[in-house]
Amino acid sequence: MCGIVGYVGSKSADNILLNGLKRLEYRGYDSAGMAIVEDGHISTRRAKGRVTELEQILAEQPLKSTMGIAHTRWATHGKPSVKNAHPHVDASGRLALVHNGIIENHRSIRSLLEGKGIAFQSDTDTESLVQLIGYFYKESGDLTGSLQRALRDVQGTFGIALICADQPGRIIGARRGSPLIVGVGDGEFVIASDGSAIVEHTSQVIFLKDNEMVELSDGRYEISTMDAEPIQAQVDTLELTLEEIEIGSHEHYMHKEIFEQPQSLANCLAGRLDLQAGEVVLGGLSEVQREIANCKRVLLFACGTAWHAGLVGEYLFEELSFTPAEVEYSSELRYRNPIIEEGTIGIVLSQSGETADSLAALREIKRKGATVFGIVNVVGSSIARETDAGVYLHVGPEIGVASTKAFTAQVAVLTMMAIDMGRRRYLSHARAEELLKELHQIPGKVEKVLALEDQIRKITAKYVDRNNWLYLGRGVNYPVALEGALKLKEISYIHAEGMPAAEMKHGPIALIDEDMPVVVVAPKDHTYDKVLSNIEEVHTRQGRIIAIATEGDTRLSELAEEVIYVPQTSPLLSPLVTTIPLQLMAYHAALMRGQNVDKPRNLAKSVTVE
Image (cartoon, rainbow, N blue to C red; front, side):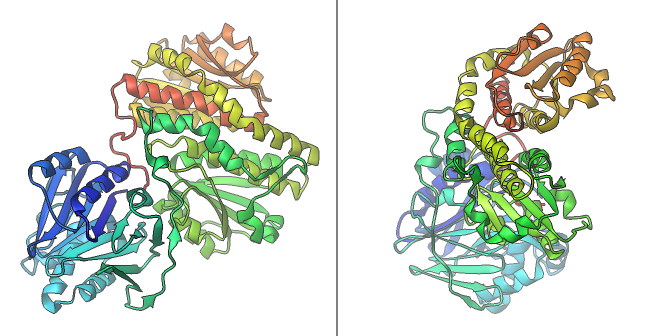
């Protein structure tokens, strides 16, 4: 959730840290802060609100040093305020810490230390950790040993960076359950929550693993376990460019990423569709062919938007591979006692590859004997490393908090996986070939939908003042209705509810009147006539119907006030085109209501806490 960045080298640290925070702000933006070591003491600057607030403070009260740490916060413990902003400093004022994660036993640690006379200055869980490190450091004078001892006592998750006034030019980092990456430059290092804060300085990185520590000083790095066993780290090349994370000519990252979808989908599909052979080529699954052939059940699990993609996948696997499939919320799966039969393949979906609940669910079902595949976007992420095999999305960085291009790529990958598994069973060559050809044409069809932006904006303007919306769909477009409602909720703060169209009459129909916009996803497929009946039910009750329909469909215009036409494609692939108008509708609704599209309140991009 939170973003942390640290720098040690020969350059001025303040601008490097500030720019790093700006690139990490999508991870949290309740408050921000920075700490450096200068003249033998720690100096901090902290601000409530966005990184720009911190920037103004630094302009008036600059910090000058060649090393330091910084943080942008998504609040868990303690409301957004200056006193709860990181970095936190221990009672001696000699140590400063930034932290991403949750210290679960912070209350007992706090109680223990307060009993020893240590006064706490914040309401956060993080302060308990830096105070504990400081308590041990006062006893021993051994910074590394004090950190190791403290980390043995804490429960929860963390990605941290620690500095000490007594040891200028040195940063210590550690992780358990929260991501941490070390950028290795020429005599300098950048340590951060993700590569976006590093790529400007170097492409050479080390992905720390759980229960690993790194010490950065004097142009050298040393990596060890938290039990002080040395580790020979692998230096990787960061698969990210500065151009990819720049906003370009777009006003918002969300708008940029919506319009990147023709290219992001093309990149996702590239080299994976053998149209002549009617086959899918997924190199990331090449080592698990036996498990795929012997699969008896597919268990998909994810959170948020990725869960909606997984629900589309449930339909795809059952229809194309004739395999029982179900989708679970990761947050529920991890706390149940799931029954994992022999032949179960788990598929975990996560854009970041660091989603805490999905990572925990992955470990739980692996422990019970499932083979687990990952569908993630971020190369080298925790989920990518811990799954048995997987497929990368290859859509480039997604900065906007509301996921768009990752969703369509997840659906595309699930389609390919379902076709691949189906060909090993009863899916005919002709049917597979037909689907692959249609899939190959999807980027062009998405581009045609994007050309409707002006129409969609005008339709949205007619209803944007309504505070309750309903989204309806059937079959593979039921998840699209859920996703459309989620997008509207999370960035415009309009209450919206998605559901199967047939379920509307089992209660929610009581809400429908002339003030309620009802968005119906109604492409031509085997459920079309039934959806028309549901639209009639809404029309009779004077609901304001906005229909997403297939080009050439004239029947819907008789019932709906507004119709947005999308290109015809295979019904199973329709979510890849029907979801695009809903993304644009949510985007423009948020703009018209004056909301921050890329940084919606209370949200963060990567949910790395439970």
